[in-house]
Image 1 (tube, rainbow, N blue to C red):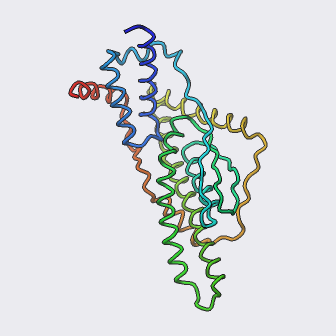
Image 2 (image 1 turned 45 degrees about the vertical axis):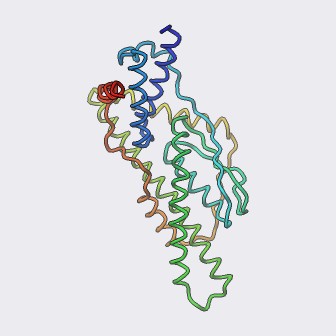
Length: 276
């Protein structure tokens, strides 16, 4: 194998391992990334020590812009976009919105973040939307059933729509708080381990801080005069709180309680590759 091919494969393996170790990577994708990295190492006879050579030429993960389309169906598009934007913010990205009005047209959540996080969001956001739509519809039906019978039809419709939209905003907020808590716990863990002399944790802590700074800088570069979106005045506080609670309990397909070191995983994956 020539040096160019080996160098290219080392870069690919490093990228897979970075994805596997990223705190935003779901368990299934993490396992798949480790497996692919192990298979490539076996195929191209690359040792773990080889991956630490020439690290200076390893490219820094790009910070990119991703435009996520959101439907305006039912007149709830603005709240959908805000909720999904909250999810992206919870994963360490920054967001802006394009054409996010009360119409039924498509609008976009403009997300700035690391490539690996953006790839995860492309999977996570549709899954969150499905959960949110179902939960919001149920909450709206329950709210409508409790409205007084003397309300006019148009008043019942307006009250129900307000409750549904408030629930959606709360749902996104709940997920954001959940993700930020996970991130904060992980950062605290790394800081504690780094303070005790763990060089791997110190390196990861630096990566987290640097990533946040780069995301903020890229977002400011792309949107230097961005104004904060105006939130609607009509809101149902009870539905909002229900949405927050539901968002905090949402299934994100994630478990970051245990993050095994790269070395332990690499010792396991090459034998699997041989068996295949």
